[in-house]
Amino acid sequence: MLMYELARTGDGFISLAEVSATQKVSQGYLEQIVIPLREHGLVQGKRGFGGGYKLARPAAEITVGEIVKVAEGPVAPVKCMHEDFSDCDCPDDCRARLVWQKVGDAIEGVLNSITLHDLVEGAAHIEQKGDIDHE
Amino acid sequence: MLMYELARTGDGFISLAEVSATQKVSQGYLEQIVIPLREHGLVQGKRGFGGGYKLARPAAEITVGEIVKVAEGPVAPVKCMHEDFSDCDCPDDCRARLVWQKVGDAIEGVLNSITLHDLVEGAAHIEQKGDIDHE
DNA sequence: ATCTAATCCTATTATTCTACTAGGATTATA
DNA sequence: TATAATCCTAGTAGAATAATAGGATTAGAT
Image 1 (cartoon, each protein chain N blue to C red):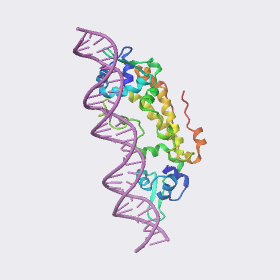
Image 2 (image 1 turned 180 degrees about the vertical axis):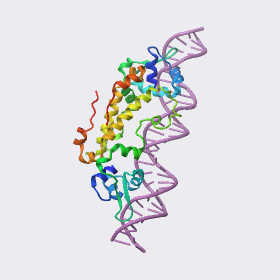
Image 3 (image 1 turned 90 degrees about the vertical axis):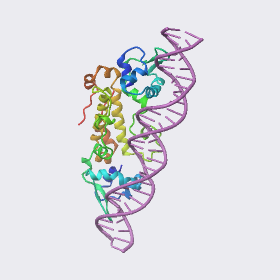
Image 4 (image 1 turned 45 degrees about the vertical axis):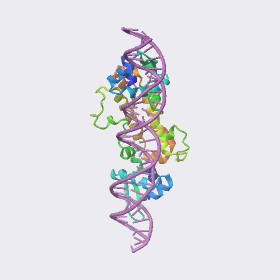
């Protein structure tokens, strides 16, 4: 929602105090959340009076998948999908891994298909876009 | 993996001690895991000597989605998607909810498309089956 | 009858994750 | 030089996960 807020408000630098007021999240928490986003070049920070944050790239070029990956790590639903799974006792032909592989791919597919620009544009656009037919 | 084990070994009653030995999970933990599966009619238990568990329905009719839902609750990636979201402060047009809705649908689609029978048959079958094309 | 193999039931714990709070150091503008 | 902001580090409360522990009940075998 921090990234959405930066995308929604446009081009200038927005302070975390403003985002905190709009999105009902404490400023201190936002300060932690923004660290990896800055380190991975998704946002640009400006210190001092009149400072704040803004998107480092156009909203249409930033996907939700990228944000989630940077902010929360790999989207894989289980650890042994992305860590070295030497500690995972499951065998080479582990059936569960097959399932989680497919689930992870599906999640990534959805997240990577939605950009910040899509979110700002609204629901209708998203519904039409990357829709998947199951059953 | 408990359910997979019951599907793999076939028709008779399998004791949790056997599953514990094969799948490297303690029997006590399996006993807890099996409770909701029994209560929701996915497995049938038989007490006493020679007892154990077996699938209550054919493996081809039990999807991984059903198992996950029974064992771990709704597959929705965030709480406010399935609980009453009165405690969720997000507005009616919350953009995040749109995203999680699509993610949840994608996960359910994958899980519901895979049956225990598919898992027993092996990897190749699953790959062909419910595959989704992203990007 | 009674021994035994098994399910069934309840409580407790250790570890990890998430969502925070607290307090300060640094930087840039007015 | 005051102030508004980022930047940095540490700690904490609550919940979830993955167990362990100890026992009660049931059904078959001897």
